[in-house]
Amino acid sequence: MQVTGAMASVTAATATVARIDADIVDSALTAPRGGRVQYRVAQPGEVLGSGGKVLNLVDLSDVYMTFFVPEAAAGKLAIGSDVRLILDAAPQYVIPARVSYVASTAQFTPKTVETASERQKLMFRVKAQIDRDLLVKHLHLVKTGLPGVAWVKLAGQADWPADLAVKVPK
Image (cartoon, rainbow, N blue to C red; front, side, top):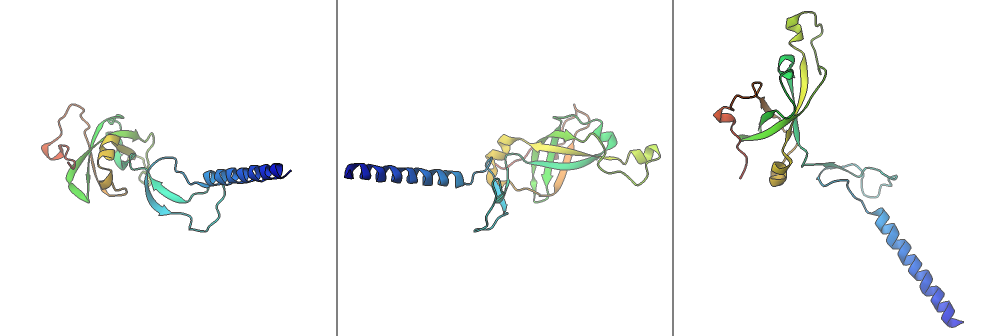
């Protein structure tokens, strides 16, 4: 009988350890992708429901600049068009990017749009996506939210001026 009781104790202990291991695995925080912590949403000791947010992460392999162009320019831009970005914080660099989005409707307009000249003031949102490989190569330098200037070519065959030649950190 003692052997059976000892076996039952070992089995119960094994089940308890397995349950604890499962609880630890279930309690582990995981992010859907890699990134830099922007800020902490929940504080230590807070109780969160399933799927609750703990940290705000920024995916540094998916960085873009949003800018606005007038209606005439928006009509000439194509997805994939070349863009050059110059950040205020790093004016010595000219960062290559590509148009990844052009809004289908104007983002803001004058109060009244009655004439052709007023329609030319319609502004369309454009996103310029920076190449993922370039971002990963310089991940330690990547910052988000920095202001800058975006340059686009409306004549597809035109060459970039010398001062807009790509210059990225080595």
